[in-house]
Length: 497
Picture 1 (tube, one colour):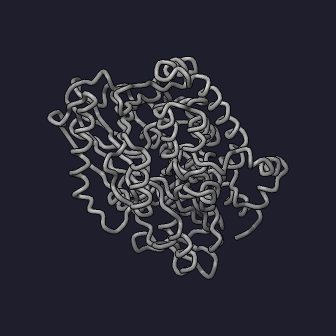
Picture 2 (tube, one colour):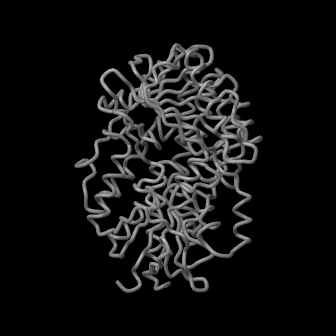
Picture 3 (cartoon, one colour):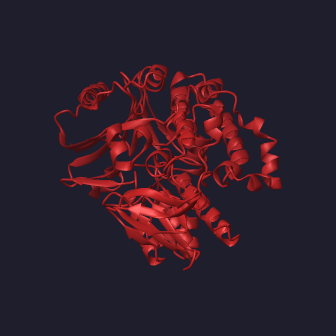
């Protein structure tokens, strides 16, 4: 396939999505993953009969996955079963109150009425407001590579650009949410959605209030068998379409002659390629895989990384009927929590605790008398002065004490344990300073202009994944792969090689 060879760096969902599309279009595609398994941050761990997803735990916008399967000539429902989650999440507040959040509007309004009767109508107004942002921004910010000037100048996109003031870019998430809801518990609940792309609700623009609409307006789902079943299914599709996948294959360099890529170096061997699709973190790639371009490196270093995380995988003996599939135990001082993480790069004194228990839906994920707890704490990205071995011990104690206060005394019921820190995220996934979601959206500029899908430095180099447009999370990462593949196909058709 002369001039149609593509080397794909990384086996995350963005890279896989792009690889499948390119193979379907007739390109010769080789994918190289440095770890023993593909999937990137979407991974799974099995410990003594307890099974855990280690990355994303909730699926939104499932139609993005369906479209990829359709393009590749497969039917998603033949291999993957998407189950709506009810409730989407159970929230535990510092005052001891509990609320179940639901995509069913009637149930959600009932839950809000029990928590804060005066805010029921506020929820209706908030959802309409969030939907308006979604309807104005979805096509241009989710489905279009916005760095491509010729695409932005299409008439339908120009109409959106002229209405950007309507998407609330000048207030923060917290400022806008506070104007809708009077109850601080509901403010905290909806502020939380800024963390879905690793940002600070007290700094990120209110445009990110699109995120709760995606969840409550379009629904939240779980993949039967675990989120990693998506990786299994995509690997099958990729191989069927001719993608050559190599694991334990570390890409060490993007090779180029002048300003044109001509391959990659993998485990010391040069692999020729006409195009390179990089699914690795774009900031790290510019530092470790691309020679020269010091100015670009300095520019990228000025971008604020997103939140990282600390994860406890706990196999718990016993059942806890008071917990749902997804649970959040809020901190008592949300603003201090984020100030410590973003302003001081410190581990928060009292972190918000997220707990996913897939055995609530998939009983086989834990022994009959047990549960599999995936416990995630938001953490700062890597910075000098942090001592993660110490913080693991401290956070474990803080979390167990906090859970005990809410009636979950599990300290003596942890049968198996595995812990991940930001250092592990950096090592395992080559993420920038251990960040989970790439670049934060804590300014108006970064919120609307993540790194591009096409390199401005080297012809033939393209990017997919959570560090580039349109952002993190399963559907957006997969859309980044679609955008990169489309750009490669368009450039090839124009004989730009």
